[in-house]
Every structure is written in structure tokens, then in C-alpha cells.
Length: 57
Image (cartoon, rainbow, N blue to C red; front, side):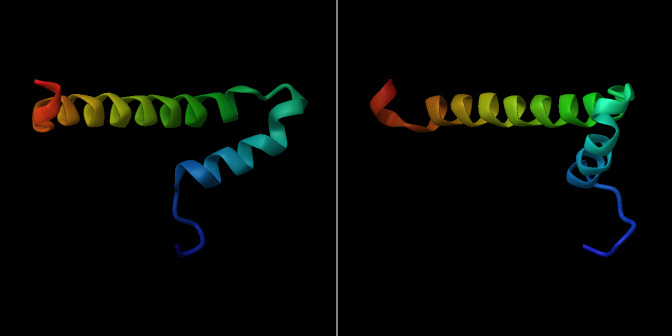
């Protein structure tokens, strides 16, 4: 990835530097987005498996 492009990983890395300086919001928002993304993908995959797998019917 070219330097300067935004991503959740770089946002968390930069926010981690400020975590103990009282600027917790810099790492909380990207972390929350990452957790919501992972939960959403997990729920979607579980429901997709329930619909496709014939052994569960």
C-alpha cells in the first residue's frame, strides 16, 4: 500500500502512540469500526452457512 493512504491498520497504529497521552478517541473510533466490521462479517458468514449447508436443514 502506498504511503499516505488511509486504512484501519494505520489509523490504529497512529492512535496507539497517543493512547496513553489522554487522546484515547484517536484509537477508539478505528477500533470500534474494525470490531463492527468483523462482527458483521461473522454474522453474515454464519447466516450464509445456515442457508447453504444441507446438513443443517
